[in-house]
Length: 489
Image (cartoon, rainbow, N blue to C red):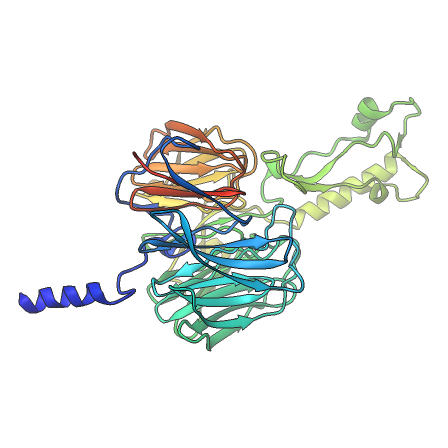
């Protein structure tokens, strides 16, 4: 017994021997699940607020080890990217380490160059910037190593996040410049293995998913596929092709991987109906000449996100020049019929997306028929799903929350949370409450289980794109301008 107590004491004194409390994007293995001291359901500026800290802009999520939090920021004026360490109890910055860049990667108007979340193992913190590469600092702020990489180039912006697992750091990087997944030694940054991805990168791909781990498998939601690689070697164990932009992070349930596979035309709601020529004339022919001029031509969407329409670049329109084949400045019936056939063929090139369930016991590349599609509607574009007590939860733009029974294979409910517009932040579950975060800064709290009851709605004073973190009963929420700590007083 004395030896046992001595062993416990020795472990307690070893720095970093305990697992980090919220070590990466969405916590342990990116599950988004927290169990521990009660977290407030009602909060906001001045309400159950422990402290707040003004910050440089950034969309990265906090990670936590012990009494320290790490996150990143972007100094636009000085073209500087920063890694910050914050004291959890006082809400004060302990240290900050910046890197200067000549050029900043570009992305969607909603993108920020500090969008990738850092990861920690308690002894070190690793951060990634698409404009710079991988950086590693000690808990106290000493730079341990770095890996410079060419600046990424993509439409969305390379908001992928690294993880630390065992003795290695894993990074999945997809963009027009390079496309690979790699493992490096967490102590010195030396490459252990690097696997180029064969899927050609396209502008509509995001590749922002965070890798997760199951036993010896590194599970990757990658460009138009989901893959499992050997952690030790990077060798493919299994993979499946699917219609996805690889935006959200998967979760585990039993021996299944649950993945929100989304693409811009994956369901009817994203493909507005085109009017017939007679409907165009009836509604938009202002001068009565039975033709449609450029001035009369309405906005017609090839694809469009109806929920979250306030976000910039929320879809793609069918241009007048594309339909006016003879370039005479008017649309005629024959031209419109040709254009409708073109659009039907274009849309047919996209597969239906879905919330997928994939067994982790596969070997090699498997057929799409081997994958269970749990839902084809309500699939989130960005927010990652949650799995707790045989129930799967996922929220999409417009605040539509779906609860799915994984054992019975059927939907339990689909409700509106009250959070409107675009949802970029991923939801989390704290004990028996689920928290969703709209881009406009509304946080809805729903009791988990089959009832689907919204118990609170909280409004913050700025937009929220970053996913939150939880530690010791305190909820940490990053807005565009501040970091808040909310706890029960």
